[in-house]
Image (cartoon, rainbow, N blue to C red; front, side, top):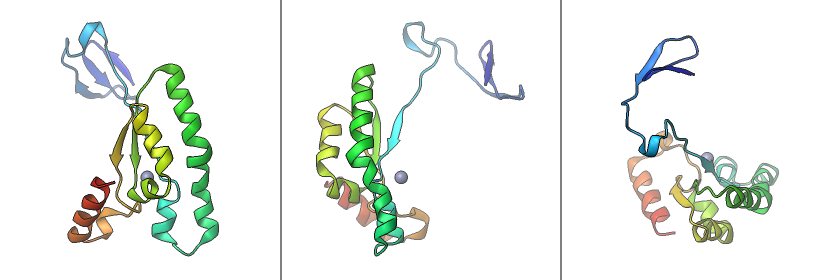
Length: 134
Ligand SMILES: [Zn+2]
């Protein structure tokens, strides 16, 4: 993506949007949003609750990836948002509490990484109530 004056263009040079000049504080011209999808095994629990092999894929995150990400973010002095399913918070509470204790934001990501379009409104509401209490 390239920029000419205050119009943001796509890679072919077509205008995507116009940026209000003076929007960013202190002379900054852009920003970025860094977030992480901390699922652990929640998606596998939803799709294949009895498949032990599939569930083993999500074990890397709480044991290795999340501590490494913590260290990296601390080193560069950046706070981030982690989208965490309720199942992950229930089963890897220490690592989620570590996220919060270091000032990161933890955002709702369903309970079992379910697809919202595949469940009823009543179940969506129930999941939101459950995850808001974690
Ligand atoms: Zn996810």
